[in-house]
Amino acid sequence: MHKKVVFELEEGDDGFPPARFESVWAFEQGDRTYLLDNIPFFAHEATIGDRVEAEDVDGQLRYRKTVSTSGNSLVRVLYSPEVDVDGILSDLRGLGLSAETYIEYRLVAIDVPSGAHLTPLRSYLERRLELGELDYEEPLLRHEQ
Image (cartoon, rainbow, N blue to C red):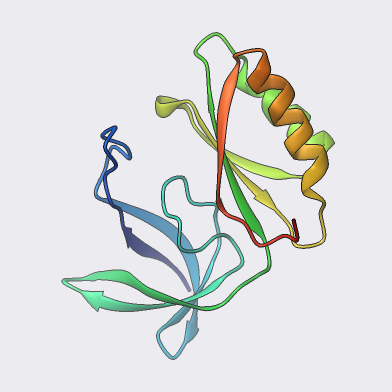
């Protein structure tokens, strides 16, 4: 059954993220564990394909810990207002990656599967960074450096 697992977020000095909680779709696995089914925009603890433990707190399933990882890495992009996000998504698909967008905050959350290489993605992002088109972070890196 599809459920929402809620992650508590810590606000940084810059006032980001803009919320205290983020909910992520997940499939119930039993034993209070859930398999995450979408890429988080703000949470740093887990990503799509990870199995997490959650407990009911006032009717919400709250993240407690990651039970097992998918091996996937999580990369996030903040793009400039003048940048065409569809172009970024097309480029990412060309690299064999999937991503989700949060248009209101100009965010792209990227799933880097365990079998993929980070080098082509990093080269692409660095090139766009140098052009002033975006900035990026690697909040959950599980690939070999």
